[in-house]
Image (cartoon, rainbow, N blue to C red):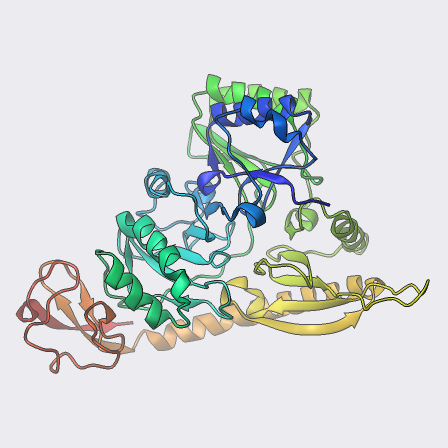
Length: 476
């Protein structure tokens, strides 16, 4: 099938008014449903008449591969409802995402490392919130790079768009290392970078259940909706947008799991929402067995395989709580972001009428945590009928390891209580100079002692002189 048209939804965040306009445009183009993509964009799932595009001038219809335009993905959807970095509020996400006004040619992620709903490392440019307010780790995997690399500085919130655009502009020089990229970008733009003073920590959380009506605080709710066929009925969506407007709900959030979440439903309106769901026959009680899957859009074979595997899980009463599954193929150009990956092999060329069965590989993320970015091959070239048993075997391995992992974490924490580390801290802004990391923003290489820094050395954040730093002992 030809690649479908998509609509860029910045950060996966859309207003009810915008979504209603999109639904009306879809109807005008002869559709009765829209779908959601793994980049938190909107997809028109069927062929549409391009000659009618000019009737809907507020919409830019794109085909990513043909047009070279990518959507920005963000974990705004998780703010207020899942674990989060304290300074990264819903409003902060919106301010940050709003910067990116140019047409992105690279995949950009803006995420919180403390949530599990939106993957951290599936972009070419991955901004991940640090413990320092308004500063972000940057992990880069440019086209052609085999691995994701950490940019050697923390990025200021209001420099993110500038740095992303600078990276796009230096792509023609084909930087092969993160150090080269850093030099090229630093030469091109002035930024307010901050020294990386400690490595990114990504805590492990089980994958959350994100469907149904859930309470936030004393007087509001959030609603997660998932449709297994990823075809969201336009009549329902328009009625929902009207109810959002009536309830003064300003934003609707698309997830990478082909679902969406509405936050801030007033308690007094809960019954109205339940009536709306009932009127359209909306099911909000799907099993986690089927909600934790990432399946390519409009791939009937992948959907059929998922149904076959989920049915087997259900019949055998298997729990997959905390795990995620992805179905991909040899020709996919997307990055894996699930705990377990079912990879369909390319078929050899058939001779005559000879039929060849599909075969699959099974991979799983190290510690079943996709954020490790490391996948282990479990089995290769197995038939479809072997997959349910092998997946159940992997699920069992996950639960056995889960207890062990927790014990190991406790042991590490106890031991690390007594680890001391000497650092130097700026008295004015509390920026830390850690000799282990150096200060690449000022060409100070890792493992450079504080004493050997030149007397002209200044704080990378507030430009205080070297004399304003004092030795501190961090107890980890």
